[in-house]
Amino acid sequence: MPTQTGDGNRVGASTQFHVVDSKDHRPLSPMAVLGRGTAPTLEGRLARTPFARTWPTMAALFAVILVGEVSQVIPFLGARWAVVFHGLALVLLGTHAPLVRRLNAPLARLEVAMLPVPLIRIVSLTSPLATFSYIQWFSILAVILYAGIVASIRLLKPQMASIGLRLPEKKHIPIEVGIALFGFVLGYTEWHILKPGSLVPSLSLRSLAAPIVILFVSTGLLEELLFRGLLQRYAGQAVGALPGILFVSLLFAVLHTGWESWLDVLFVGSVGLGYSLIVRKTGSLLGVSISHGITNAMLFLIMPTLRF
Image (cartoon, rainbow, N blue to C red):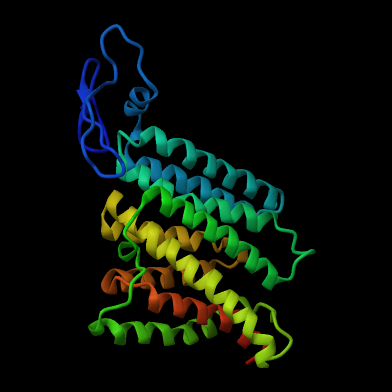
């Protein structure tokens, strides 16, 4: 029986199909997948499986990442198994994307965009907190996350405006200002859920200046660039705008499982969904990045020190 490729072409025992280049969508030369008397290529074998299609592959990858995150809170598994599963996710993304590039280019691009996700989780789970302070830890993660995002951008070559790196239009400025200021409410709310300790000894300018900058860059700008910029764009191309937003929001929520609070997972997922809808409306990451930075500054710096 013929199978269906990600770009809608039928592949059979003696069928040729047009492949699609992931950079510019131009059809390349036809390629015989299972020609008579020839051995099937890796692409040919993959085309006959569900993993040449988008949803089965996304579900499998999400399941591996979910198991990795849940492993952290299971006593007999712990961080070691979380690293194993995130390592598996990284290997799967890095090997499956080039194999499926000619069969399902949107899926391959999404997988490249997802590469920083397991990478940053592996680094965060293996970084020795006994050696570094939390602020130093955030700085290290920011460097790794930045490197992963830059690598994905260089491979995918998107227009910067298409991943939210643009100023909002004048008509959207009230929305951007509103969501930025709403970060104070979000931070206040999440602190009451998690009650983390303070990362600074006082609220003096000297104590707050560097941590605020680090939190704004690492958890504000870079996380929003990854999730609401790269992932939202390429998930939308792969499965459609709204399903893509739901996928990115679920992924964003699951990555907060390590706090061992299902209420926080629901809270973060809801906030991520709201951020995604705002970025889809305005096309800019400015407001949500500031909001995310304010949220984490309230969560880790302001509220624990004030102790309301």
